[in-house]
Figure 1: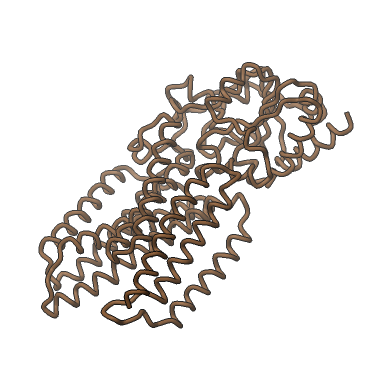
Figure 2: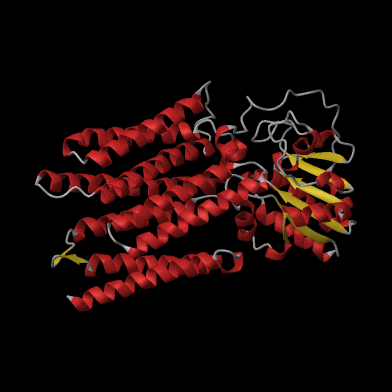
Length: 470
């Protein structure tokens, strides 16, 4: 039916356009939620259009019970997971959902390979181009799935960083075998080599696991971003296979946006991507030898409240500790309280603070913090010399001066927030344990620094109560 085909093309066009509009709107917190809904609506139109209007050689899809059962189960599970997720668990949820996208792309390749193999056995032609797309989708999708599952388990605390001597060489050997086997299968096009296809699948899973296992904590945001782009590229190959413009557009947008974000984050860390993937930092095995740093001094809640209330300029540095404590709302309350007293309050946002790209932005946006108060690292570093008090909330590696001064440190060369240029630094931590990258922080022992121990939420609540009594 020509009419139905035209409507389906319009559905795909709407889907593709809404993806582009949605992505554009995601660039600003105020429009991000609406952008997400617009893209989701476009996706829904494309899915329903495919289910009811798509036909091949005059035959409609059918299998409606299976399709809608899967859609309902997926919708229910996704909705429950999204509603229940805490902001701290957001990075592992992103990894989990991303892994599902990779698995989906890999399954498409497996199904289509079996379909193609069956046609070849019946005497059909061998299409090397189709085989190339199938293998590309399989390899990238599987690596993305396996890698994302490891990232999810690491962020969840279920597994630790794992590395052994020669692991990177082993990874390169496995990858070389995957490429050579795939090239052989694409060129030969022999249906009898179907079992080798599944060997490529298994090797891709192994490569995905060992690819992410050694990567240290502080590099996880970059890896999540990279795996995200892999899933997008794998989905785009699915779009090629099915000649589906929505899958193609969506995949290319995710792949390119993820790649750009990965490059920007590597730039922010002043490290090439190869260094992140091969010379990963993080984990206690890497830090420089802990030297005797001397004594640190503590500051009381009342003293902290006084110095912040009578300051002209206060800068808050949010980190993962703030997310763990679910303290973003009370942090916003503190900011409003100080602002009412005439104090200029801003937030210094490091590109890799937290566990995923933009983690701190998402966290503070949830608490309705004014986007204009969130200063990027370069802007914040210009402000620190004129700042009276810096309040560091659960951030560690992104404020560590060792990145500038200690060539032996694993984070040496990574741009950090120059908090020590301010007049006073108050550091809130639960204990003196090193941060996620397992490195001691000399900032804690500097003359300008004072430690304010305790859970971020309860400390901020006490600060708010104390400031109200002044």
